[in-house]
Image (tube, rainbow, N blue to C red; front, side, top):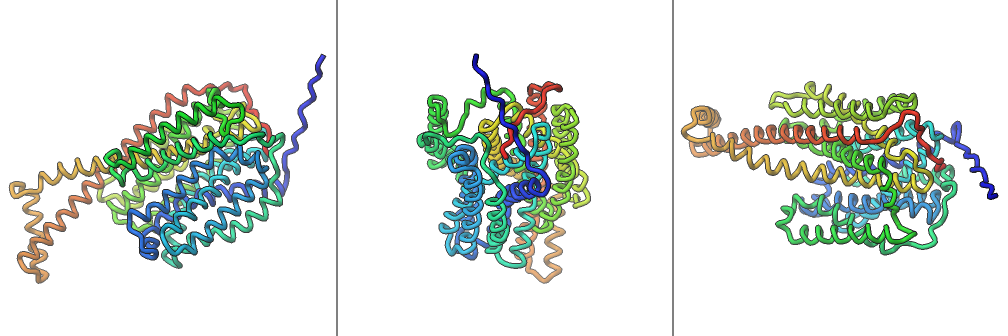
Length: 526
């Protein structure tokens, strides 16, 4: 009769050691996500400093996004191969050194190269940080662990533009990267001191080089197509069309490869787990909503309502604070046995209400009109995020947990890219359509437009302009007014579109399997 050895007793960190570990991990995750948006508001200053065009400077954002999404699903394998302590600390060092070199960059392609390297280091931090935080809590506290990680996901992208705008306005764009250095040095020391390897981790006997190659080609191509598609007019571009074929071929080859060998770089067999599939779909929608709204709202208020970048960034902070406040409350609800499906649906409805309120914005809208909607968004995000993270990994342990976390983070990042791409396409189409409709009413036979143009012309004549100059300026002013109106209508319809998409989350949530008596089972990754 075979006797099975009892499972080793897992010791979870306690006291100061536990919270230093958690703060180190969450700080690194926030730092990584902060850099996805902190550069955006500085692109104009960077392009002027290094002599890059508006189109070229977009590569500073694209390079980081591509390397991020490539490395995230590989973090579990790399963590086991090098040891989690070594891999996480090395990722911090790579991220910090690349940040330093980004700040010292003197031309575009030097900056793009180091942004790519920075993304490789940052991507290694995100998923590993989540497994470290989960591993610091016993299985019945997984909701608390995911709530803490969820705060990082929210705070990073939200504070990025505000911090980037403040640094650029008061110092220089170089300090957008240099600000990472002291935090990175401290994180390196704490990582090496407090982070340990995952219990039971086994170094892979072989490296799946073909799988890694196919993954890099497929995910890298997909991310590039999503990031650059709008700028290249999508499939009117040979480059975008070719990379789409590369993405499809490489993705099929990757899936076939990972299912046909016993040492895959990414264990996609985990998708036999029904809840992981549902959780991935929800994570995709979460990324679409999170990054999509962070992308569209600043454009809306700056273009249509005339807000400054700093004003926009500061406005979005209270909503993020609401999310940070609500996350622990949601964690407690889940820990007390509340049905996560009901909590997620509540979050979906709050987010839907937020988007519908924005969809009725007008030229007279002010900051006061948006405070309550953004409070709803803050609570809605909290109610959605933590339960989704928890439900997707119920029943997974050890290495499978780490793989699932990496896949979930990759899917969320891709969801954000798809959301931004869809919104860009939608807004471009709507802008053209709405402008065509509006311009048709600005003619000599329309009493309202002729009266407005005449009034504007008289105004410019009274300021000393000639008749010809006054008429030209009146038409230019009228064109600006039409543009502002078309932009508001387009953005309103954009918010409405995202709101409708979010509603599709409800039937997906109802399909998730959940039993109240089942307890989330997680082997500590500490």
